[in-house]
Length: 248
Image 1 (cartoon, rainbow, N blue to C red):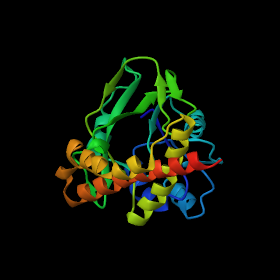
Image 2 (image 1 turned 90 degrees about the horizontal axis):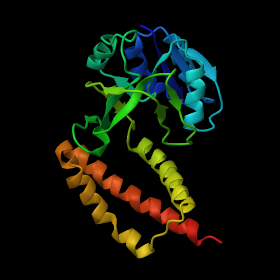
Image 3 (image 1 turned 30 degrees about the vertical axis):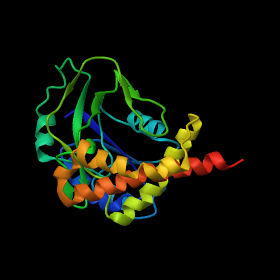
Image 4 (image 1 turned 90 degrees about the vertical axis):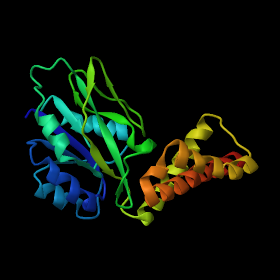
């Protein structure tokens, strides 16, 4: 198989125990490490990864570096907290990469939260361009929400990657604080503002949107908790924006 897998990571030891065993079929796993302090590197070595140490300066540039170290022209990009399903592995192995006219393939990502695989909801309905020919494109320079910019026809794979984005609620709130701060800064850079009263009063709107419009009610108790926390995410992000706009 002429595919290189790229992974960028920092302190992902727990997640790598799940994700790396599913890459047994790949002979080139490029692993870019950002100063991990747990046993991330030991686990990566155990599974035969090619390890490169590089200080993180943005998701786009970090992944560009990973692509530059790939031995093969076809690149499969996964995050350390993502696990390929067995069905997806079979589907990828069935592609004739030497004769395909495609230059990229999208893959559906399934959100996993509190041990529940979400079959419904906004987070489980996206298809991401994760498999691509590096001769036809690469990642952009975005600090966050990086994208593969590619020229040529793409197709969609049917089977899924499972995204274990949060180990537990403590892990959720660690990321919650980081992401709401980044989100507030981006809103400020765009010149956005929202009154304090409207910010606080928006919680029911966001909860109902996530629970009913995005159909998280079909994901059971975990879907309810996710909707509740997602509503608070929006509120806290705009509270932080209010704080930034109040500073002189």
